[in-house]
Amino acid sequence: MKLLKIIIVLLIILASAGLSFCGQWQTVDPDQTIYAIRSAIWNAIPYQRDQADIRFIRTPSPIQAPQGELEIKPVLSQSFNPSGRNIIAVEYSVDGHEYKTVNYDIEIAAKAKVFAAAGNLPAGHVISSDDLAVEMVPSNRINGTTITDPKMLVGLRLRHAVSKGTLFSASALDSPQAVKKGDVVTIIAENGPIQIKTFGVVLQAGGLGNVIKVRNVDSGREILARILDPSTVVIDM
Image (cartoon, rainbow, N blue to C red; front, side, top):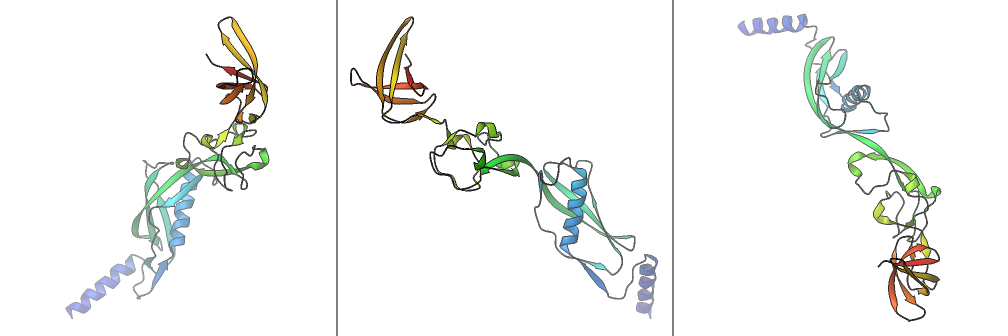
């Protein structure tokens, strides 16, 4: 008799809360939670949808809730970080009554515009605008050598082959080839007001500013000289 009274009291409490106690439950699909959290974050951060990634540190699991009209409400804290890691509290309510709150660990990574190879490019290839594909990547993938300005790419030569989708970095690029092996150039040697000129034969290819080996035609000696232009090299003394 005492047990029956307890059951009746529990039924009354549940009924007054607006929840049915009939053994029927609904499963909250993880995609519903993910969609609600993403929507709340996109409304709060200053990025377009292609300018940031939202990553769940742990994928939400299905949640069991009583039958009824379900509401999923993510709550962003005052310390919410629009570019970093956050704990997002999600309130689950049924028929207007809060059922439970679950915390989710998420990370927001801002993206930046970079340039990648539009196709497979061989070593020595001189880059044109057609070789560039724009990509938006998380900022943490960008280092000090990653090139984000197309003006710094077009006209440069690849030091080594790159595959499609590879981000261009300064270490993979060289100045356009100004001279090639066998070219005849003018060698200039300067020491104060004194300037000496002679002819030389290029022994290795290079771009403007590169230091290469050149053979002095008069003496037959091999020297190191800096490429000034396609017809001139300078001995830095």
